[in-house]
Length: 506
Image (cartoon, rainbow, N blue to C red; front, top):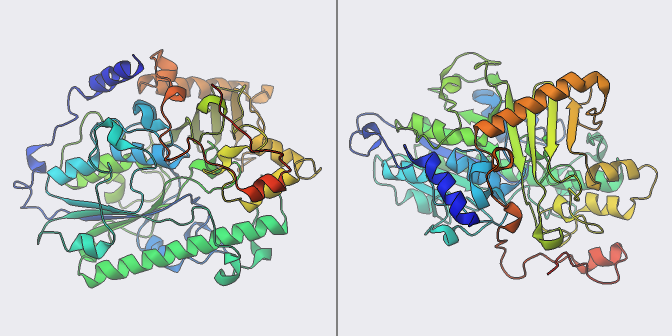
């Protein structure tokens, strides 16, 4: 019954345009206009603040920094979900992730709906992916014959050799970096000055944590080298002039309060778009945008009608503008969401949440305040996607020292239970440490932002707010092999566990 209800819901959304492509979008009629190529270079689990172009003085990212100077840098870009599969699904569909059924979960399915990749391929684009594309999950259970991101290739050269002369193309490279596991002592090879690292206030400032961040920087610098190699390769092929280059991540960094959390550390991402002869560069944009906006943007740039199912908003007006700052006045907030990130609670339950982010505030609505947001004790597995299968140094340090007077408040912030409503004053508390939801001085702000969030969710068909029945906890977890990852023996030993902890119940 659950699936039938959801199919009906998706169908009603798509009745008037899910499969529509305009005449100007078919391959034949669009020959008169040279349509741009699109190259997406995506890092994995990478927060916006950790690039030289975004102000980090330690990490070295010359290729990305140069592209940011030449192009357009977005200062308020977000993944709609702090989890890779949902964020990537919403990006492909151009829809809010809560409208996508099982695709709102990590390791879920992907409903057979319109995605910009299929639409552009039908309109004459050569479309391909390298790396993850959409995932992890199991799209074939919903009728997909390939990854929803497109045909998979082993390299850009392999992809490029299949392009018919004169045809436009779209290529999405998903890097492995800086996803864990990090290269051990990578900070040494990267030449990172540990003393110069700015440790965020929500993490312990210790040598172990600084080294972990330094290893993360090594991975980012590896991604920067990949960016340089792709730009050089496309240049050698004579394709840069008509290629839009996009640098972006799928969600925030893989640290406590980052990945799988609705704080900025989990959702705020870098976004740089460059097409020098067409988009005025050297601009910083303050409009609030999400990965979801890619779908209508790409279709509009290619001269293809945007299906009515896509409720995201095209960035074309911003890209073609010559102004900086806030271009579209109504882009003054984003709404983000989380459901199940990993199999880390009894019965495979997730942790539903929605958040409203403005320039001044972050409001989070937690639908399951009785549950453990970062996974059940003693492993608190949601903080990294594979629990402690490969121990994360910062997380391990916090788990091992959770009773230490200096660590305990930070441990509770990262792993403890959370109230139904969280509210942060970003002007006073940019790292979102102090919840002021119960402060009488913020009562009016809390009421206004809560009402705005709920109104937006209802208007966009969120089952959690409109009374529709969709049970994300009941969605199948399609991870290969055992239905949950196992912690490493070193993690078990370090935490003093007598036996492997089992989250499952019958």
